[in-house]
Amino acid sequence: MRTNATNNTIKRKMLRNSVAISLAALLSACASTSVSTENTALKSALSAQDDAAQARYGARNPEQTLDFFKIKPGMTVIEALPGGGWYSKILLPYLGKDGKLVGVDYAQAMWSNFSFMTPDRIEAKKTWVATWTADAQSWRSDDSASVSAFQFDEMPESMRGKADAALFIRALHNLSRFEEKDGYLTRALKETYAALKPGGIVGVVQHQAREDRPDAWANGSNGYLKKSFIVAKMQDAGFEFVGETNINENSLDQAVEGDIVWRLPPSLNGARDDADKKAAMMAIGESHRMTLKFRKPS
Image 1: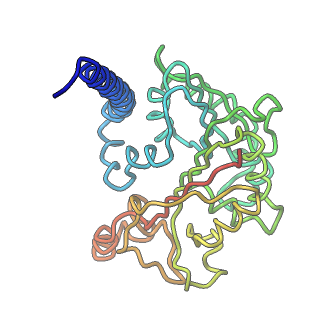
Image 2 (image 1 turned 180 degrees about the vertical axis):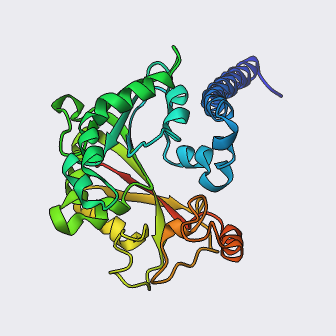
């Protein structure tokens, strides 16, 4: 037979358990709300893009890619080679008014290595920071991230230790291509390391060459790099390899020596006027891409 003391002890235990369960449920609800809000923000940014941009989602997988890199609202994010802003236009509203997007272009001296760059185009690159920033401002709303920019080899001292993440989305192959000429890749990664906070993330999406392909062909000049090469260069720069995902892989792209990545859509280099070749390239689809995550040690 239970005494009053025993009953009181049982009641106190039941009360403690009830409070613990309620607290756990509250914490779980708060966590779920936070994740839901962030996902909603990204989905909203993605749905706001024009039809041409959204047509590429199946090949570029921006939602899954940014989620894998743990890009969140309020972050300061470096985007290497932002170009016309395909990813920038997603990042600006997603990072939100407390976030910052920093565009980074190749070093000014590197542009003379490209055969398609005329003297006038090289000269115009000297004003890229101002020009790109002005373009990016036009993509913003009052609730978007602020924008700034610099060129590799000219990172402002004010950027040191300020970035939460850096994204190299199909931006490493040319840095690698001209690495032997003047160490462009090594210097770019050194600046990236300096710009990141301790624990900062580097996200890489890059056209991937099979490991059994010739190194000379997979040096970036054809658009492709080997995973082993990128991991080694990132580790040489001081970064830790965190992991990878297969979300941007395409096993149909089995590029061999002599192939260039731009033979595939959307470029279709050398196939636009050949119906059969174009059909073959369209059947392959966009390139096979590795998606790798690295971290600056804390």
